[in-house]
Length: 249
Ligand code: PXP
Image (cartoon, rainbow, N blue to C red; front, side, top):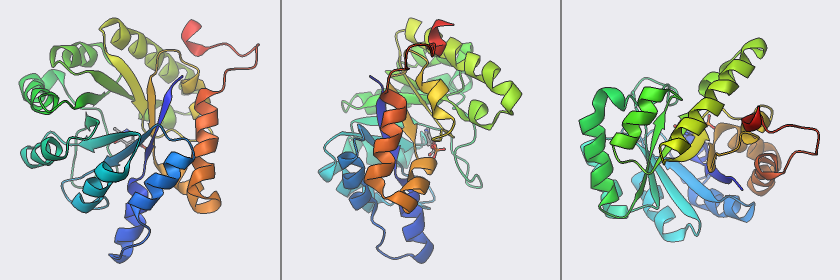
């Protein structure tokens, strides 16, 4: 059964819009857990535009499920991660001007740096996942970097025009199979919504989905627990007979 990682960054985005103390992502994490989240994900960005160090510290103390820290492979953030030791760290590329993470990490082009970062985190018992595009060279390099897992970037599928979505989905099927064959645990995330998640959820082999913007957006309307419960249902409920699993195609 795939796990649902709920990214609560945008709860902190609302708080930071007023630089005040509400809404509190720590409270949101507890409600997400009650709604069935298997994992709480936060991105401690170098510019601290939403999640703050205080949030990660408190989440480490309060989250009962898996805590996944998204982060750049920079020296100061690695030092914080090593000290706090969340369950898992997901290394992502980070640019100051971007609205959100734009592309996958270029592991193949930065192999020794990524390998060092993986080793520094793994030494503290942290599971390390690399956020990559579903490309063979990046999957191979992730294995060489000794990562435990890869998170395949679903953004190209999520943003594809209707007629292009099947081909982007096929990229994810191939990528998940190649990553599994390389002995990596396979996650997926970015741009997944209530309306586009189902075909990805039906690909066999994904162990975890990390979803943020869409869940927090829905939570504004219906509350966090219900928003999480609804997404969890979409990623875990088996197809009703006739619907084929995309991974079997
Ligand atoms: N996975 C990674 C690696 C991300 O950087 C993000 C965005 O922070 C997500 C998943 C969640 O993406 P979204 O907010 O579009 O669901």
